Image 1 (cartoon, rainbow, N blue to C red):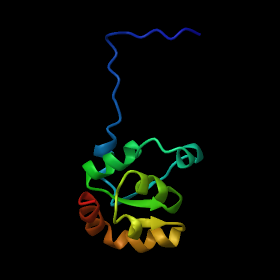
Image 2: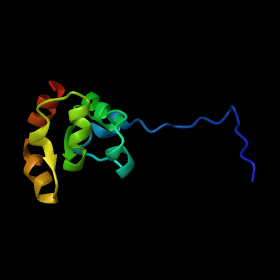
Image 3: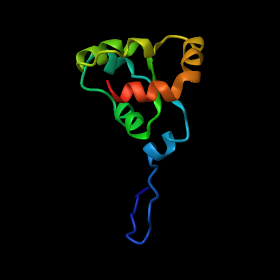
Image 4: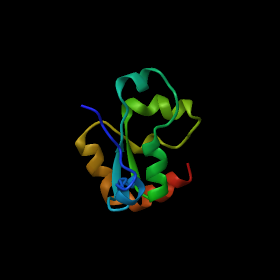
Length: 101
């Protein structure tokens, strides 16, 4: 099958930042390759900051944050659903703290 694009068809793009504003907290996750081979922080990090949405950071991603030169992310590391639930009530405060990282 051949995909033909028409100029008169408008594609509505999903605005991730706008969508994130509807949530108090999001997870920062990486695929195994990214965890082993540092490139840079994922777009989700910057999108969450722009949206004012707190990040619960998968503990396996700690090395990525360290390599990026960030400090102070350790309180936001999570390994279990209980860890995420612990952060959730403080999501607005965490989002403000993370903007200062």
